[in-house]
Length: 413
Image (cartoon, rainbow, N blue to C red; front, side):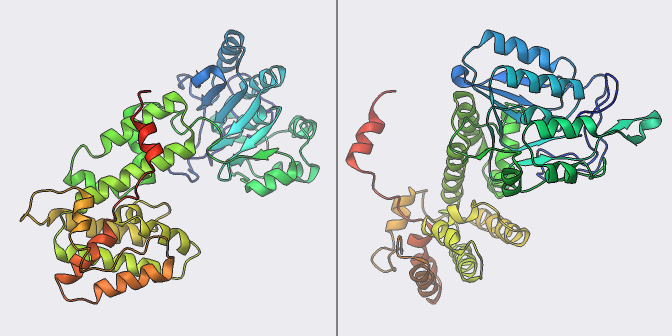
């Protein structure tokens, strides 16, 4: 429930259509606070400026938050990632936020009682993809039956926070077993959120619910699903990526930098494992990339930018559709299972250099049209010349780093 519940202690505001933190959609099971529900996770972030709160709002959460705020006077923001929970806890957390003048920030989702805390922020910030969920108040009666409750307290709380009356009325008309999840623009117009930030601004919160290696691995595979095919052929591929990701989370690396780094490392891992694929597999990969660039798509510019950086970047780019995932996984599995064995492994820049004299140069920076022509020209050759011509396109040498950057990277930290 997004507002105050007229219910006794132990009752929850969590909706049946709760946000699924891993799947990114809505679940359809009942969410309720069991007596042994895990305690709300509340931790101090790097540099003592952020508090990370995640999970169901269970008994004692506000008291623990008060202790943390008392001990650390430099806290400026609180990250909220919660499916809701106990009404009293949500309201008490909101009161603490207002008392300490904290900025509230939703990096992923905040529904039900969580919004009681969010709307008390001095500033209320969201990412473009953040999801806030609202619905009408209810009480939980015998046998778990949901009974409509008076919405006057919710209405008063939202209006006092400066939220538009039209938005409040719409939110309180939503059934208790459903959720209203407005887009970011609507949240801004209604005064629910006061600002939208990019993912490079604050420390990463993607591991707030569980900051361990397995959770890091799960998030990486969710964002770069084709890595599972590489891992099947080369066990241990994901572990160093997860370790880097987890270390950055603990140090306060931003979410934007974390995502960029994970994709960069994933792309390198894919390319490294495909560098020795047999000519037929390389031709399949080249044909797949050309077809992807030729399809009408609003993301065509982004697809071409990925293609300029090689096959690894193409296969690890965001928002791959089901058909592309299936095709990519099939080609990857075949390519990794049929590696050329005539030569020992070579660095990617050496692999790319093999065909420089006989192949078209990569069309880096020349735009989609030049890149499509380069792939088409390579694929028009007979086998195995086509594979040889594709290598510089599939495995482009990394751009040279300026001398100043190289010297800076060599300095001890």
